[in-house]
Length: 106
Image (cartoon, rainbow, N blue to C red; front, side):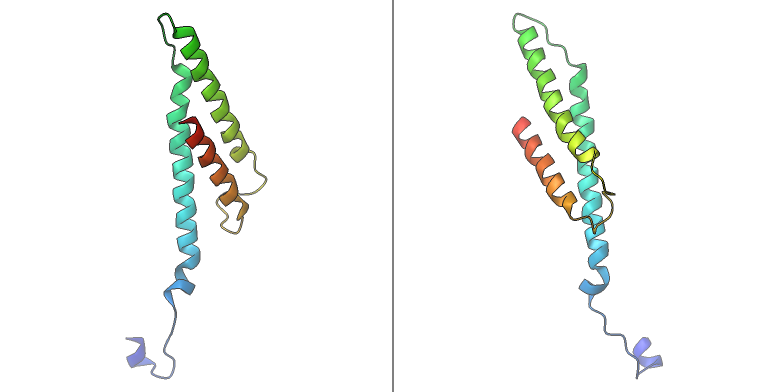
């Protein structure tokens, strides 16, 4: 329609230039969603108590996992920048470190 109404002023916009920031923001939203879902899953560990002959040992191990996970969460929670700001590229390394910690725990 634009080319018919204004033949001398056709818009030539590349999708990458127009939607690049939006794509980055959507990726950041997915990362934050994954972060919160992981926190919800691991928060269930605080309620676990195992009985039996090895119950105390297993419960202690679970509490240690919970403490290790909480340390990883605190590292992401205590950053000095807005995690939704896509220009804060240091989030990528913080999130990567968080995912690495979760993989080690799993």
